Length: 416
Image 1 (cartoon, rainbow, N blue to C red):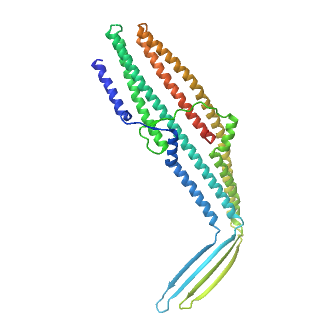
Image 2: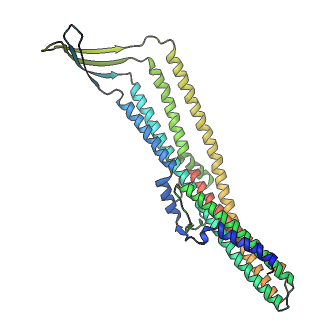
Image 3: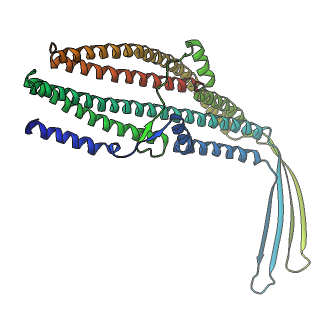
């Protein structure tokens, strides 16, 4: 290699060593199941969903105890100039005996809100797991591409060594050596790009999992082709199992209950209360006991209850419309996800055939070159086609795996 070609090649090698910390750091193997377990334990989105569910459960508790027996104890004392001091101690209790069923409706409505929050948590779990799978398969693809780029560099180096040997023996022209040097430099540049993409994929997996995964090397393989449900069955499963549609239905039911709750705004209430009071300026104190039964019947409220009913009815209609819109969206997403899986599966077999053909063509081209009847351009084209076919095969496997993962999320549950 002359000095003009040596300097750029040296810069490429230094770039590879600089950008790729994994060349010196030991890669740690990790499986997909390990990544999923880490995500479920550490991902902040799941912590947020659990907190939201706990909040709804606490609200349900508040509604349940709103009609419970309540007690209050108070004590006070005072002293004025020129008079004896005085004191007062009292204890009172109260209990709402009947609110015409308003609290029962509120408990039922809040129970539906708890169930909706539980479905939202399940949706978050599915979303996080899908994100982890997609990121894991992305890292696996980047790793395969990096390994293929390394293999290509070694292959181009062997071709350069052969070209130099033929040139030194006077069998081939100087052009063959120059062409091999250029191809090797391009392969090293491709390796730099592959290393950079690999580190980006590792960062994406770390983000999806929720914890740093430096130097992670995936050991789980891409998914093998499997049976997928028919369109009608898949749609039924999605409409039955997807947490977003289940949550939407629960909210719609709660919205209808909201109309009944609003109508109870002017309902009668019956309550009982009692108190015991000790007061005076000296001992023994004066005592006072009181028991009260109270009936409250609103007569008119200026139309406030009617407006609240109208607001609740409008909210319920909006929730129904949202549910119908979501059902339409689900139908489209199911069909689109099924088509993506089928298309990706078809590309796998086509890519496998392309790899076999490219391998055969490369073998023939190398044999012709070594026998002296072929040329370096034929070998270069065959090697480029082979590398491209291998990458296309990796890409097809990746696309199929992510398509299946997305289909699982679309249907609302993972395949067993």
